[in-house]
Length: 315
Image (cartoon, rainbow, N blue to C red; front, side):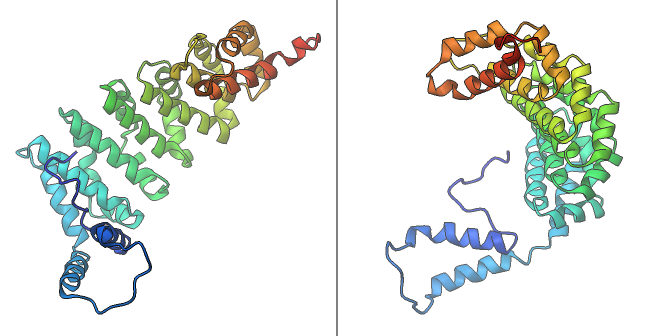
């Protein structure tokens, strides 16, 4: 997001793992094709390592507070705010730093960022929410207490890049943290996921399908709620046989595979007269390597929903 960065210059390290990566990137052009013999360290490399080690003495809290000041300053321009968000994201990828970010009051920047008139700042703030929440129950709970889930669902209708980050942030908040999931369901979150699965925004559709599959696999009750919301019927409407690879078709077939892992899902799929569509998909795309996954999904659905019919029995 931040402009002016030299892509060829290794990012300055902020921890020991970062130092190792930094040193490897900075010296990879000097790597020999054969094992090297140990030699005294030359002065240039000694100075390089000393400078790299000095960078580890950065006061992380000070840097976070500096970034927060930029983000809360009404006179800061959007580029400066985007760069400040990048700085925070770099630090909070470490789970302990993410927790410290909350403790120093860092979450105060989230709501203003989500409400920014700048799409870049909104998108960056959503990415930050995702980084804070991912596999971190401490931050998931405190983000829930910030009451931002409703705003995240609202941003699913934003421009494509923002909407994609909003779905990612929601996914990171609700997966593996039932209080967040319950709150999301209470505000109509499952309906929002279904709406995104039917969108033409491919990346948003894929992220929504992934979250739906994850939740249905983890919680049978959530799968049943999706089915009650006519998820099977709504997804079947997106199944349109094509002679070539179709990302939207593949996503729909994948989603139907998840929804038909119960008797009610199978029943609804059968009532939707999917058999002819599935057979057509298999006929049109048989043998095409790029269509392999959608063919597998179609074959699984055909066997799962219509095997008894093909055997001449009433399922």
